[in-house]
Structure formats: structure tokens, C-alpha cells
Image (cartoon, rainbow, N blue to C red; front, side, top):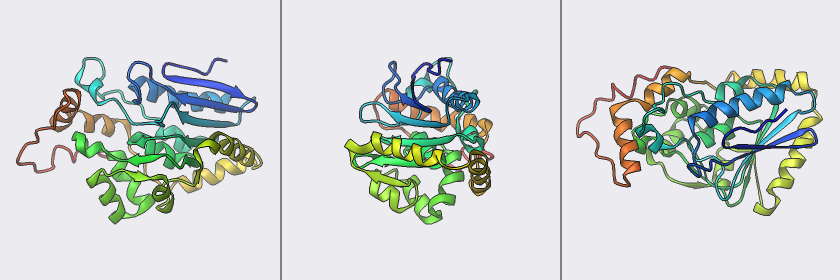
Length: 259
């Protein structure tokens, strides 16, 4: 079975599937189709008796840098049918490793949090830029406080500052940092360790642990992308200019992102 799809190159290495995120049309970004494809890839690996671990990594100096803001200013990709892989990550019994090779932001951070083990290169950098695009980011406000605490969650999301792999490790967003040259070998060693666990016991443990991590539905994600403020943020990004925000904002529009 061919596991690759648009923007997702998949290679079988023994019982491990290696997925490299690589969007040739819009480098360093994820299209809606790629988000859907990543969730379906997890299901395919789970259904394949010859595979039991999935490693996801990026190309060049980028792991996953989030969706493409410019795409949401164009016809045909407006956020209505965004199918993020997070619910699949939340429920799957497949052992999943995030091998973070470089820049990791927005949805890349959430993939790392929900992976079984997130191992990062010491060159990796992390960032949560959604609010600077006018996106209320319901996935961020739902997951981040549960992982790092409310005070730190607000500081990271509201300032959108970049932070290092060591800081991501210290706050519990990832599980391990290794020298850049050792990332692939480290992921292989982790895959071997994960394979030693009983698959049913591993799946049961993950299901219980993930009950403490809230998820958002696709409808609220789509709603957060379709606001007037998000449209201005995406348009400004595409036009390479600062966004022009309304001087008065009650928060009611962006707040309508039910979990």
C-alpha cells in the first residue's frame, strides 16, 4: 500500500513508517489537504499489520510551520472543511514520534504535544503566531494551559515569541532534545523502545492520559479562520504588510469558537 500523499512523503523502514512533511507548492506550510492526509495516514498505519510506529519529521530547516495564511485569501480554501489530525492523534493506538528537525510553530506544536514522544533537534525553534494573524486559535487556548499552565500559556500565545528546544523541554511541550546530527538515530531508538510495550496496554494508557488534554472540533477551527479579523490577518500576510486591526474590538467575534 502506498502511504504517500500530496505534501507527505512516506517511506517504510522495517516496521516504522517515516513521513516527511514537504509542501512543494508552498514550502514550509500545511495545506488543508495535507492536514486531512496526515490524519488518514495515521489510520492507514494503524490498519497495516506490517507497521507499528509512525515517525513524522520535516524537510530542510522546518518541521511543521502551520497552515498557509495566504491560501485563506483565495477561493477554494476558506477553513470550512479543515480536518486537523489532532482527534486522530488523540485516539489512535499507533506509536507516534515527532522528530522535530527545525522550525515548529502553530499546528506543529500541537502535533508535538499529542505525539507519544516528541524529540527535537537542538536547532529547533518554537512559536505560536496565530493571534498575530487574527486567529483566536481554539486549539491553542484549549490545549496549551493544560500542558504548561495558564500563566505561561498566555505569555507564549499573546506575545508570539520564539523559544528554543531547551525551553520547550523545560515547560513540558516536548520530551527530549538531541544534537541535530543525532535526530534520526534518536527517533529510531525511541521507535525500538516504544515497540517493546504491549500494543493494547500502550493504547489503553494513551487513551487514559489523553483524557486530560481537551480537543476542539473542526467546526470551531473553521469558525476561527473565517472571521473578519482573520481575513485581514491573512490578507496582510499575503501582501507582506502589517495588519490593520479595528481600533475597537469586544472579542465577541473571535470568542465564538466552541470546543
